[in-house]
Each structure stands twice: as structure tokens, then as C-alpha cells.
Image 1 (cartoon, rainbow, N blue to C red):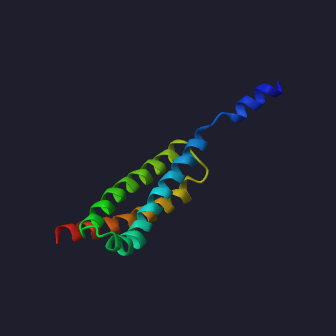
Image 2 (cartoon, rainbow, N blue to C red):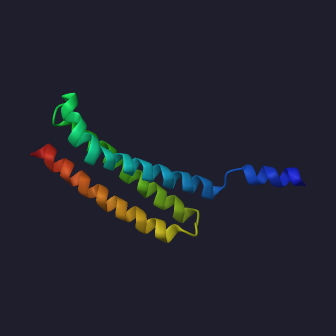
Image 3 (tube, one colour):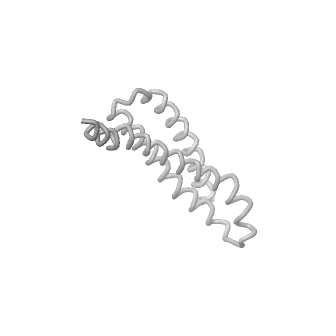
Length: 111
């Protein structure tokens, strides 16, 4: 009986995959912010990269980060996770910040 209990406890449940998706979406969003505020403004000039590389890279990662946040919200609600409402608020805040960065990247590309 103990073996059966241990086997069940080891198997990942819906909340494990939900939490992994949340972590992944936050990491992608964090990478986007580090690129936008640290790497692209300060490091790319030293590497001699073209000025248009930053907005293209930022736009690409920003879109991926927004999608990851949306999928994470969806997963929390489908799993009926007890933290789904606070996590949704957090994700929506991150998505708003990412949309602002995407807007700035688009303005820079179209200018």
C-alpha cells in the first residue's frame, strides 16, 4: 500500500504543470525586461550591432512572453487552482508592461 501511495505522490498533477507554466512565463517576461533595460541599451553598442536589432529582438521576445502569460492564465483557470485570481492579476500587470514595451519597439521600428 505504501508503494502505491508513493507512486501517486510522485506523478505530476495538473497543478505541477500549471506552476511550471507560470514559472516559464515569468522567466520569459523577465528575460524580455532584462534585454530591454540592460542588454540592448548598454551591451549592443559595445558589440557593434545595428540599432534596429534591439527593437526586432524585443518585439519577438515580447510577443512570446505575452503568449506565455496568456497560456499560463488559461492553465490556472482550467486547473481551478486556488491562486488563479491573484495570479491572473499578476499576469495582466506583466502583460500590460510587455504591451508598453512592444509599443515602444514598434514605434522605433516604424520611425
